[in-house]
Length: 200
Image 1 (cartoon, rainbow, N blue to C red):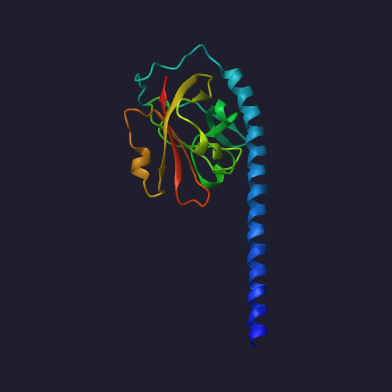
Image 2: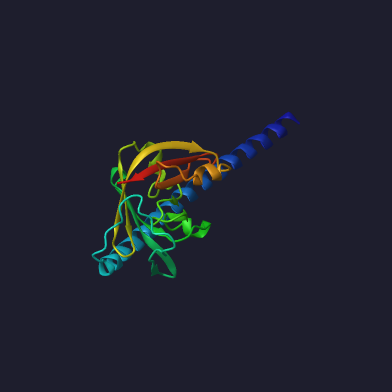
């Protein structure tokens, strides 16, 4: 009886280990696919942004353009509002107009707000190719958002904080010292890494 129980426990242990390895393998492949998808879109989006470029410049911080709709570019049936560049992480990624779980598998997404009103919130998965590096980035680093019509908005990271997924109001709080928010989940998904930026 003891031998049989021991064999069952060993078999269960092996199954759990195989399941964990399978999940880890899937996550690695999913992250690799996301990186390839974002890279392909980024190249095409940059070409379209270059064609759309105008002589317009970003308004000064505090000069909000209420009610204006952000220009978009459509690629493969998805609508992009521009690109996000984080030089310290050597990242430049397309940004989708709206977030959904399907969209997050492609690239970072706008969660809420607008660059016109200095309250834009962007989210992305913690893939190595997306926002995983946010947890190590330091205040003072630059973030550049380029709109679909080629206008650059430049930001400086002011601080990083950790929030729970239930703290949506705090995430979206319109703080005076924050014009752009970037966030992603820490591994395990129990908390979020939130980076706050001010426009310069």
